[in-house]
Length: 236
Image (tube, rainbow, N blue to C red; front, side, top):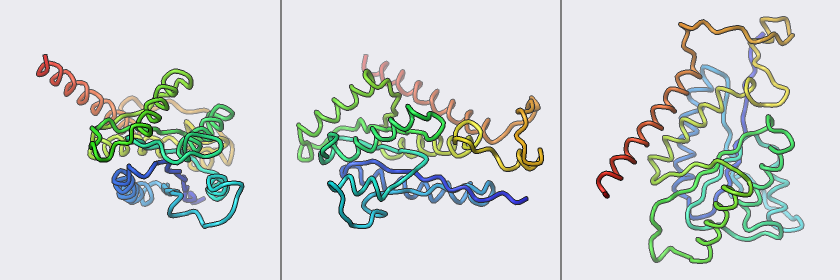
């Protein structure tokens, strides 16, 4: 039985000021698909409102966008100094999309994953809208406290690319095993005649792809910690 290709839909929730980050994301997903699509039959499909949504009518523009977007597997949010345009239900379209994903997660934690990143780079004076920036800071504060969300931060596009490469690889490799409601790896079903079997112990000498991803993530975190300690020593 051949394994069918799995397409994971990634909804991008991002205001207009992170256009460069979105371009970097598009290139990165193309790279990821060349790796996962060829060897593992898995593919990421970006869903972006300004690219994929057909013009139409709803109770409001964001309502129409929500209907057109439909279901997805990963919500990927990016913010810097703008919250975006308010909707009748939220501070912006990006915030409404995040809240919709969070509500889904609360109801069915294995059905999707949420990745949220904030850029902490300095904002050019001529690009700063004080009210927009304040709303972004309020949103971050709400996520830290009220929602209890763990979000990522990045200083520049290279750092964001490193984070996304690791995080998207990890989610792609664990889909169907650690998340993805009611879905199991095709090779396990094939080996058991279509019945799900308990996980077998892994040979301690066998290093799988997920182990490599985890190791890369750990090393990246250690590198960031070292750079922060060096920065503190210089500033002291």
